Amino acid sequence: MKAKSLKLLLCTCSIFTIIALVGCTANESTKGIEDSEVASTTKTSADDENIATNVFPKDEVIDVKITIDEEDFQSMLDNASAEEMMTASVNYNGVQLDNVGIRTKGNLSLRSVVSMEDSERYSFKLSFDEYISSQTFFGISKINLNNSYSDASYMREYLAYELAEEMGLPTPGYSFVNIYINDELWGFYLAVQQIDDQYLQSNFGNSYGALYKADMSGSGNDLAWIDDNIESYSGLLQKSELSNDDILVDMINELNNGSDYEKYLDVEEALKFIALNVLTNNSDSYLGGNKHNYYLYEDDGVFSILPWDYNMAFGGMGSMGSSSLLIDEPTQGNLVDRPLVAKLLAVDEYKEMYHDILQQATEGYLLSSTFSERVEELSTMISTYVEKDPTAFNTFDEYQNSVTELVTINDTQVSSIDQQLAGTIASSGDGSGSGGGMGMGGGRNRGMGEGRGEFDIPAMAGVNEQTSPTALDTQGASSIPTQGAPSAPADGNTPSQGEQGFPADIPEDMPAYFEAGGFPGGGMGGERPEGMGGGFGGFGERSNQPQGSVKEAITAGIALVIMLLSGMFITFYKRKKL
Image (cartoon, rainbow, N blue to C red; front, side, top):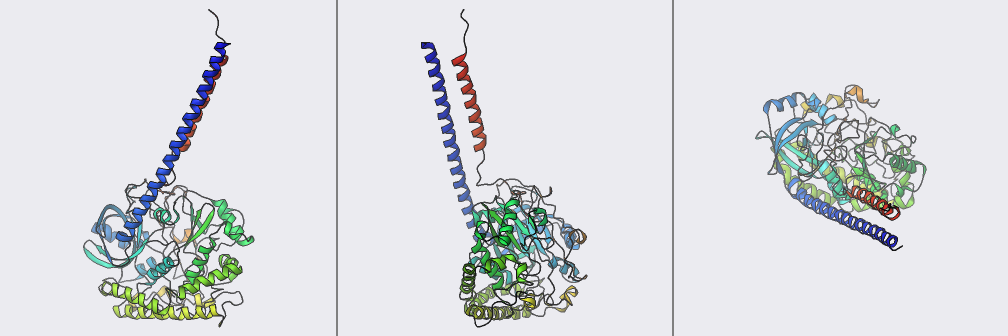
């Protein structure tokens, strides 16, 4: 009896010992999680500070010096449409990075420059992690160098992103840069960060949610309900390794057929997104015929709408800040065909919030005196660089005229919005949208100076104001710190016109080209989508998602089972007497 009691005591002690060990393991895992989160936050904060100071400073023009083999560079220019990646070294504002990928980029802007006989002013993409998967520039793996196509003022995109920041919208980094290639001044450009994991980490505190990009060549980019099959929404391209397609379909279903919009959508952010495009009269957006230039990011089941690509803002599509733009019916085409606008503005509370957002902007950043002063400040900062730009699309006189016109466009737009908010003129119509006021208009420099005759683009001729605009630059993204996780290289290829398909109303002499890339990554048909480096679909390990806790729990569980079985064996095994 005494021996049996000792055995039971031994078994009990063993069980309590295992429980204690499991508790210690859990505590260590929790501590590891907390330490990982602190380290991630600290690193993100440090990267953000470096990015603001060294990568995208707002109070100066920085130099980007690219060194590339002369033959490779000439081949890239001669075959610009291929968007072939080449190897280069880059000195970015004094920071040297070697083995960097560089290629031409763009859609309409790229093809238009290809058609010019006397210009090779292409936009470029720098891919820091193209050949060294762990290499980034303060967490950024790709930067776009935009050529200010169709913007003689050089300011549209800069001002639109600055307004977006002022409104509290998630915004990529951006700054003016002077580009040198092989020690020769190439041109004055705008650098823009891709939507990458550094951007997501900075704005959302994580980078592991599902990311989708609106694509004008597919269906569903208008966010209208089709059915519950994710494949029906080909215009919402998955750009992340993680796919929360069920939640995406649920969000679209709720937006169209339900009323609890806040369950799946950051409504305030969506209203700001709509307002941004209205305030800048940007028809090259969700509001326009192409229904593109935005991302959807899912964070804990709730989607945020991320603004993207604003080189056609402030009437760049030819609307000239038209007073015909209706703030409560700002779509090109029927309002009902843009459920994000139609459904949200049908709720009185949301419409009031939306009107408040508009008013804050027209009485703040876009107020005539404030806006003109800001434009003058930027003009003072960049004029010398514009005047010396050896590859400029426009003359310096045209630049000066377009800066003046930019202020006039804003004044006209703000006056119309203020009157609509006050109720002195109509803010909505019969549901058919704002029509021609959001149209494409004429040539490349519409509303921004006449432009040099030799750069007038025949493909733009004869396109009326109702024509849906062609695709503009689309960009992918990626980022990982210099010491970050690896990623697979992007091929940089672009599908042919026949592979992609085009809107029926685009003239034959103005084909709409679509970039297939986007973000690199696994989960995307095997290819690393353009620009997403090593994290999602190429994005590296999620820095703020600790690893190892599951493995530790399994190990502890197995040990517990073994000890329990051992205790039972000791307790109940009958030894034979000798």
